Amino acid sequence: MDPTQIEMIILNLAINARDAMGDSGRLTLGTRNVVISEPALRAEDPSPGEYVVLSVTDTGTGMSEEVLSKAFEPFFTTKEVGKGSGLGLAQVFGFAKQSGGGACIESREGIGTTVKVFLPRTAAPQQVEPALALSSGTREDNSQHSILLVDDDHSVREVTALMLQDLGFAVTEAESGAHALQLLASDIEVDLLLADFAMPGMNGGELARAARVRHPELPVIFVTGYAELCELGLAGYSVIQKPFREEQLASKIHLALNEGSLTDG
Image 1 (cartoon, rainbow, N blue to C red):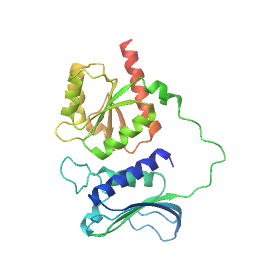
Image 2: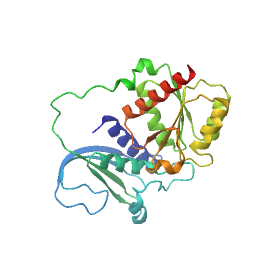
Image 3: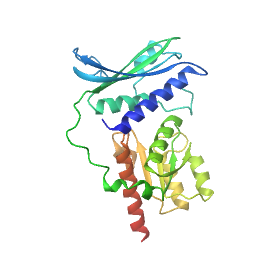
Image 4: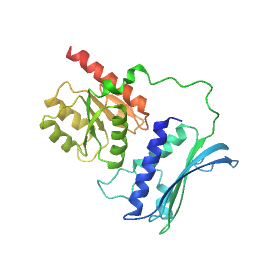
């Protein structure tokens, strides 16, 4: 499994656990080997096989049966408006399934929650995996570029910003389309706009059109969890679908930056 995906799983689950515990509590991370012999009964269940289980446990408020039944649904959230889009657990489920595993939640109201992520066990590779593709660039190259990251979900934005910073990019964060336009109007240095498409108030498409009035050559990449991209009217724009890996994001950014430089030339 991609190390960046594991990092995003831990960050997503830890952030959710932190929010559930409020002012105090205990956060416990664990790993263990398990063998599943029973067939999967739900979409999120792992199929029979050998797995490493990554678990994140909190002593927070816990979930009701109703909330528990919807926890892995995209965009489902119990948080207040503007406090999150509910993408955290859906992303975790997506990463696990993409890797051939699964996930489950054990929770009791007033006691706490444990989220278990099942990742297929595998032998160590015989050969070292190749380094990131050349299109991903080096940290030194990336440090020359500034990214304006726009996402209304603080948790998702935090994870993506950490990924960009790990790649070496300078990052400016905005919590909404309106906030992003304010930053652009202040003449901050921006080489690329990376925006979530589904945002309240002003979606990514509306933001991109408004931004290009002032910066017509600004490269734009949309982040989306939707599968049917053609229905979103994103033709002509660069799009990266959730969940994505660090090297996929880096490659997408470099492609957009290079296309922009060719246009400028």
